[in-house]
Image 1 (tube, helix red, strand yellow):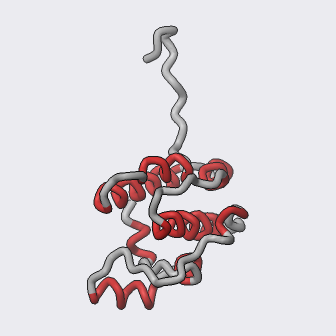
Image 2: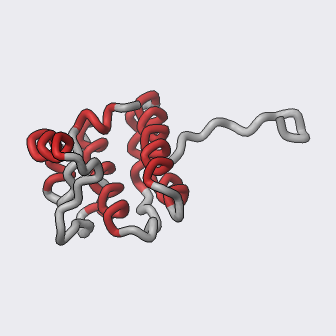
Image 3: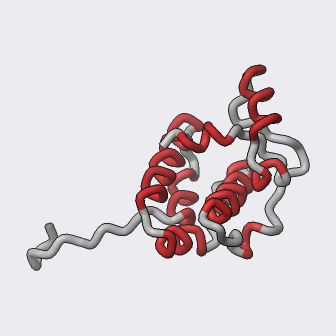
Length: 132
């Protein structure tokens, strides 16, 4: 509680805030933060979900993660029947990235990566995004 007796209203994590949290942290923590964001996103109303994706995230310092966030924004917006935010369009990788880089995970990602990820060169299977 704050000094005046009122608690701060809950605000879901935005993609831009998630991006800032990913800076300088290890891969394991990054995936936990993504899972936390996805869990919050899942429980919000559609209009709030759109607001969570709207602001362009600052760079994480890793181009692969910057592109991942763009793909994630487009993917989540599409699931709600919306277009992705305009900021996602220019983001893509020149070399393919398999965040889960075991042989089985690569095969699964090649078959099951959502279009928003595939077209940007990020190969992650859809079920990896359902962890939350």
